Length: 118
Image (cartoon, rainbow, N blue to C red; front, side, top):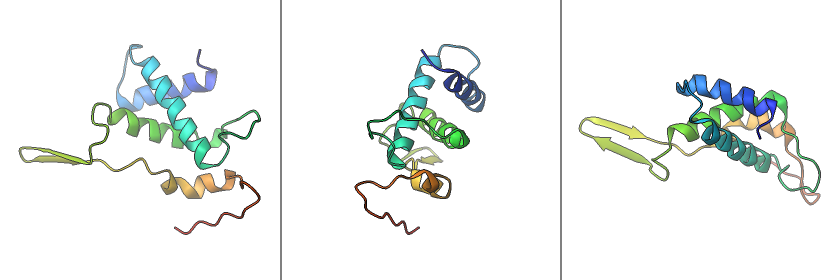
């Protein structure tokens, strides 16, 4: 069962992608879970043996990543496509583009200093 934060995120994402019924709720909940897992892994809080909490002020990143995931359904793995005179190009979901927001949550692993050059 989804928690209140997930329900709020789901409702917001449904507005962004134009979903007006509840038929896609399970799919969107799964995409939210996947996006959160990717973000937690990026900030090194994915497997530290303690309770994991997602920082609340980065919900906008979760929404953005989920919308990207949702819009790619059925086109996973494609880099580009063209049909007649219309062409589409998909970029990878790139969490480092959110580095300025996420890096303050990054935890050091194994006592090493992490430096990022962007």
